Length: 488
Image 1 (spheres, rainbow, N blue to C red):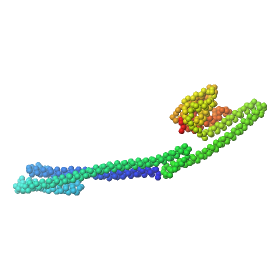
Image 2 (cartoon, rainbow, N blue to C red; image 1 turned 90 degrees about the vertical axis):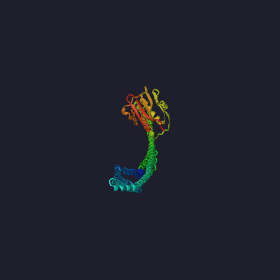
Image 3 (cartoon, rainbow, N blue to C red; image 1 turned 180 degrees about the vertical axis):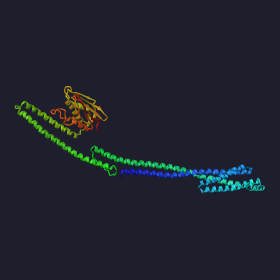
Image 4 (spheres, rainbow, N blue to C red; image 1 turned 30 degrees about the vertical axis):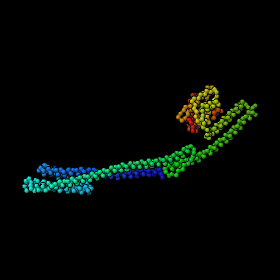
């Protein structure tokens, strides 16, 4: 399965859990809203119930006050209740949803209507009794048979009992709904916490799985690349059909191709080395033959040779020696690619002392400064110093020759400087002198082959370091090269 598909599935799982969380939270939110709406409605019912009860009590008080005092001032509250209570009753009916509560409200309204008929009859007869003696006797009859016998009070007591039952039932249901609301909120919070934790855990798990898998794949490919860089042309087994598979296939192909090329190159190098030794032997043979012929001529025809001929014959051995030096320098240059000397602890100051004792004449002034100890391939470093010091001796006048060798420590490197007080080098020749067989001396100079500085440059490049020359004509020369501090 491709990595993109796995990542997509991981996101799909996380999104699915999030959608499920949203659905559950939506469902629980609906319950919370339902319970909240019920509580708000219940508050309105209790408030309206109190208003109805108070309105009816006000009407009852006004009725009794009028009967006892005959003051129609009391009837204002009575008639106000008759006008306002029907609207409250209608509103209350619209708020009530439970059949039990509706029955209680209907009973209250019925009893209240009976009480109103009872009260209206007494009020009307009392008003008529004030102007009509016949009506007065009828009022006394109603007063004695109904009011004194507490017919109205019976209605009022029943209404009060129903209001009490109505309110108690509403309070009870409201407490149940309040508890249900608290449970709904708690369930919502718990659900959100569980799903949020689940999303976090699953997301982390998916991310960890994908990162670990990709990291393992990349580590295997990096290891393969490192092995290729180190010359270990291994292969990596990768049967996963994803985006990184093409990279592993390419690296395997590159490793195989490089292995084949290195094998062929090694074979070619062996053939070239063998060829170089054969050619050097074959080149030296005729040169030695020429030297022998010149010697025979000198021995056999010594009395017959003119001074000019002697001069020419003396030049030939010098040319032969130069040719042998060129051949030896070429072999030494070619041999560098295959030289793998052992690494060891090197005291550079002691090495310089051993080198200069052999190749620097005693009349030269030699100064060394701040030379370190390091762990490296001694043979290669020795070749670099030998060639640079030898070069300084060749190009510095013997009478007042001065050679200075110093070192400066860098972060990961040492920077060595070999300075002489010779004639210097023109800037246009600063690069040319590092090319093999290029020399600033005359071609007939037996000491210069043009190979030494080429060997120095090749060794320095092998160490992945740098070498440069700082010089002006008539102001001496400084060769500056870097060298690794400590090699593993």
